[in-house]
Image (cartoon, rainbow, N blue to C red; front, side, top):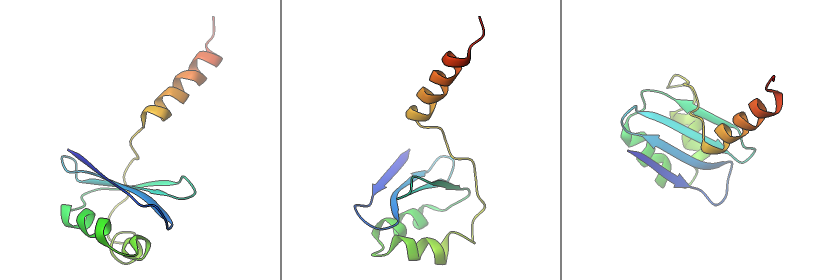
Length: 90
């Protein structure tokens, strides 16, 4: 199950947690996305409630968990298909 938390202000704009794979993905205000693997549920719960998600990320996630591969979003897949269509050889 994927859980999502949107933040209306601050550097971190969204946190997504996949409890099946234990992967946490963070989206930043500059559209950068980072993924972390083997993250326990309580980390997602805490960053979702923390008054400063960026500080929580810096103190508890950035150096503590290994980075993973960011999962492709439907928009990413659509852009990839558009590029493939554009450069497809006949």
